[in-house]
Length: 278
Image 1 (cartoon, rainbow, N blue to C red):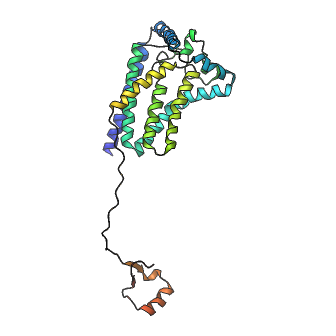
Image 2 (cartoon, one colour):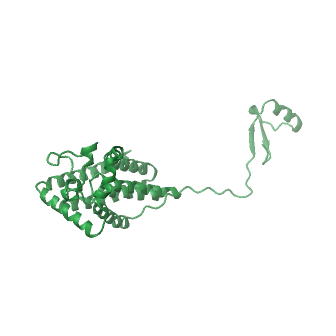
Image 3 (cartoon, one colour):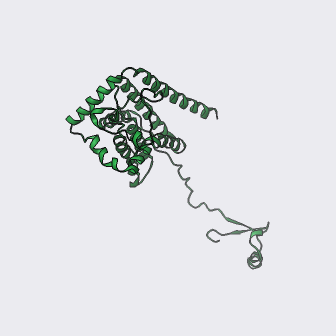
């Protein structure tokens, strides 16, 4: 019990440290709004130079379908964090080694992202006029963020890298590693859907997802992979060792009395059958 309590305390301390670091990043970005907006325009122009698909062209066809946009907003708001928590809890119970591996990967990715947020504040495309993207959360709902000036809980000028995509990819990699069969590759649908959602809702550029992936890959490469779970081996039984089949006389019934009359009493209220019978 003491060990589990200490483990839980360390996990809570890690979460609290990451949360405080995120809050520090929110405070540090205060007064750098113009820099974040200018960086958003630079990222947009860089994507055009790289011939990446336009986020606006990707979003435009879906704006005519309220249901699809609302589903995308709900996925962005309600799937990202709960899915990560559910995966961590399941791994903690069923695959402790992989839980520790994933937790370390998420912590390292989040720390790297926070450092980049401080170095390069970036406004999301929905806040950059040059992109022409619509803030689908405000127009269709549900909205995750309020006004940037009044929002004290989240850093809206921290678009790069996309932790939505980074966390979703890390979760998918962990689930692929611990499940079997060809269907396990369907876990990769989670980061792919997340990528489409963050772009369609105007919360991230394509490059935000690219940078998150580029951060996650070396982190996973540097972390020591957990060893596969070891199953208990069957205890070998020596050849020729035979145990008699013991049958309680009281569970035989009347048929046992008739049989006893034919083969004789074994004594002691129990009958011993030769191996292979019964």
